[in-house]
Length: 492
Image (cartoon, rainbow, N blue to C red; front, side):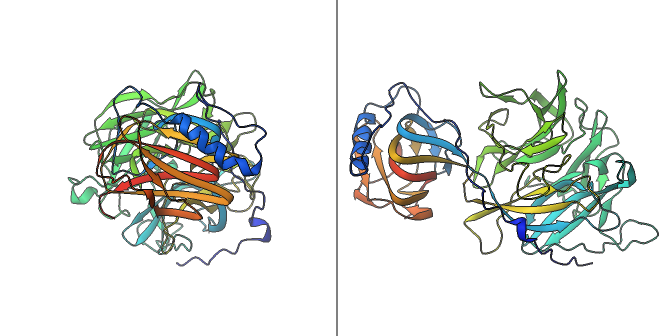
């Protein structure tokens, strides 16, 4: 049956939704501007830029090829100077897209998965309900919904499973314990068998089972024994195909020293797993409970893993998603601030009421946006809900320069291409200039001033570097500006 569009209430919009400043990047040789007058800001930034020019740093150049590279970590940053920070950004809250108000759903529906499959957007989730005393009203079931725009979702009457004498529902699985946290994916392995184009995992109590489906609606276990056993699994555990490494990757919940943690492993066939290890974090990360993990490959830069683990406070039983990123899938840089705080926009400060769903999609006619989804209103007398949030393309973290200006010099990198494109914003009274240095540290290219809000701008040149592959560095001289990513292209 079709579900009516949910109309947001007037307070659904959050007027105080702002980006967060994370660690300010500094090097031993960095200089901080002080007491700069507005007319001297740009000149001062350029002067510091000259100071950052110099010989190529020791070590093998980073290979970026023609990939999209984001400034999520220090992987490409050699030196910084002035007022420049790596700033964590929050997605903008949009409309409520789903209310779990069908009889087989309820206020503890959850563990939502979103993905695009051709022209159809698919959502798989747990339908479940508890009473005011948190006693189960009905068993958990796995449900399926679909959409053509990622906003209006329908529950097709699939006729697969009985619910109180009728098969007129969107239930796709009723098995225990998998329905507690059934999490599917579309298998992009080119060698996948026709009857296993969709796969899923689910389970509890030290047993995670694998399932397969030809159509994302009819499911069976890949075998009767669990495929993974070293974990608690009472969370949204997940698996996906890693095309860069030609292997399946799993992430699941475990306990370490009484603290909820994340574990990972790899597999060639989805059944036999190896390389099991706990996920580790960069130096200085605090020890805290992480419930779900929401790890995925970023579709525009699939060599980068990103995740939205849910931080859990065992005292209040409240949750909030944070952001982390990795280059190898095992060691992550984790940001401390929440990307969706418990206080906004509505009903997120309740028991387990603020999980990030797994998956991100681009909606039709919105090429500059990424849509993600998060839950709200859990364990309440009214049904749980899902709200859409929007990121700018590549807009998880920005290199941000303030009014005093700053300079960023990348590490030497090996690239392929003849054209440079960048994703950036230059705010009023701001500036952004890109210089290209060769492998000896000599300036070989100077851009024209970059202006405006451009998610995919070709860089024009005052001094043409005549890009044609090889080793280079970029130097960004910026004031009142954000830079998100860059990419070299083979053709103009």
